[in-house]
Length: 511
Image (tube, rainbow, N blue to C red):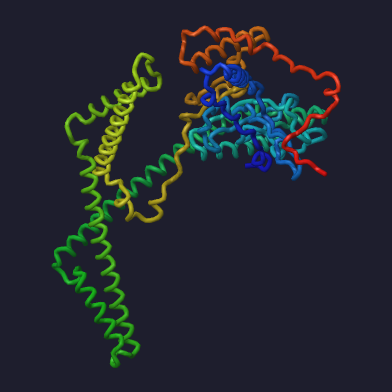
């Protein structure tokens, strides 16, 4: 993360107001309860995140020691529009910003621009590279979403490379620029609005072609791994069965261990100390040790494979029962209905009924988990794709290849849909083009006048207080006018007492 973004500190969320400490049944605490409820309503109705922010706030950095600056609130950014839940990983989203005056393009993997992003822009003439980022000049151009971070990083690098070619190798692509005046030529080179759409369409086309090659490589690796596993496990089973049968001495573990000990003794004998005998005995001993290692490895792997197959068969037993798939579908449907009933509870039902529904939902979910694991175990028994079977693979075949690039799930959200027409006829049909709803949050905020706000505020305060009291029929708080009445001023002192200081009884007297 960039240095300035790493130091960006947001204000902590407000402390929740606790109404449980105030007993609404006591008359002398009614005013305090109304005051707290009114403060809660005002705080909840404050539309703080209405303006979209695209540039990092420079005042949000950590201040020097001894200086206190209130930390700003978390800004409303493009990430809140595109990924409101914040589940996207770094690299899955590319944010594209455009300069409103020069149409320069900046690509970013963060939702906020910082001054270090200006390093993407080359110096091609006077006033061609802004010294700092101005929030009023940079606007969201589009947002590109990818299914995997690796694909997003690859597209990010390609887009920056293509833009640099447009800016630095313009004499090869647009030789007519040489005949233009210098200022007009600089403006033409800086304007990358149309090139951005064409570059993106070309990058996605290259990724689609590269994804086909990656899929072929993955299938080829899988085929090689399957062939290797078949041959390897066939030799392991044959060697393990021969060791268990003990038909030949070279397959007997005890005989091999005895021969290795015997060769160790012969190596120490006095009449075998010449070079030829030592070399002969060492070679025989090493061959015996290699054979013993192979036999022990085969026995160990065969035992592990047999034990895991038994465990998988036991785990897959529920899936072997007739009607298991139908039962799984019925349980999923029942769990969905119970989950919706618990998320939107019926007010006419009692707490005991809701608790029993929760227990029944937990039971259904546990049964669903058991059945799903049973079906997975059933598949593993037939394919032999578990970790014990794949443990005999060499490192080259054991390492998985990257996920193939795919245009399924790639979406481009444009601030202005007309920009997509610059690459008309070059887009793939599987790419989704959408409109970037920048002002969506403004439509969700109701802007009221002062009088309307006071009316809505009083109605909300009365509703909350009635709910806290547990009496929906009560009308004593239908119009809490005392909330908006000014408090009586304290009685002013008169005479000499008004000039005397107020004594502090907790302050110790001094001589």
